[in-house]
Image (cartoon, rainbow, N blue to C red; front, side):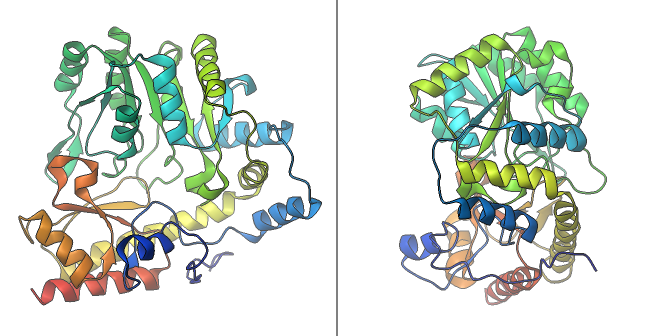
Length: 392
């Protein structure tokens, strides 16, 4: 029995929760069980809540910059969890990873330039490229034997043919759950280096790795690679503090860092969130045991879903995740119609999941499920899915 209780069910309705309250506003119904957007249904540990409450009790929330304790907590976390050694000057605190991607796009490319992604992928990648008047170029991941792989030949071909300037890497990959190996990362890095392509490595899910796999940060590949790299990391996924608006953007190269900071200032952003920085300092200092126990709990959730599908819904294929708390399910043996699948999920099973179509056109028969919730909720969701399929 661990120190922390992840079975506790916390009512999140009427808290301005995007995950819970937005569904009612958007769909006009309150009967859907939400397992969609990537935030968790677990409370912060008391140690971190107490530090936030202590800061709140001070009563003044003026402009804030990260202090030495923040910088030390970040340095130690990245080194101890991921083997990344950074200098304080490399980091820029921003509100979030998508904000940082947009800033990087504007800093390192020009309107009309091509930016490479690997679909199916986190949909704000595409949206942010388009909204900044750049061209989306896709290196489609290969779905083979219930597993996703990189088409390296196509990767380089697209870079050459489209004159790609920036590559957005999702590592670990959302939604397919791949934890890229060191060899895979170096092959992509070599191609990018050969063709003078910048890399934005989104490693926001890097603290969620399942047993038997190891996350390799892009910043550990070697000095020649990091000179072209912007690393995006944040405690928002790890500790479920997305609403506190904080991310750390690590840029070793001074010229790239200067370009990023200039674009960041041009966007009007200067000081970070006082409570975001308080929570980050506390989480990275006191949150290790909580995260370790959470990883065990998530492994149990994954095992439950795997066993449930095998026993009751063998026609639904689980793409085995290597990392993240998001699972990717293939419903192509249930139906060949995206419209029918959405009816099954929403109207029949009364679930709110993330439809595969938002991650890429070729995955319209997939669904992404967030398993970072108490197991009782996950069991309820799977039973609702089973009953809906059984009624077909």
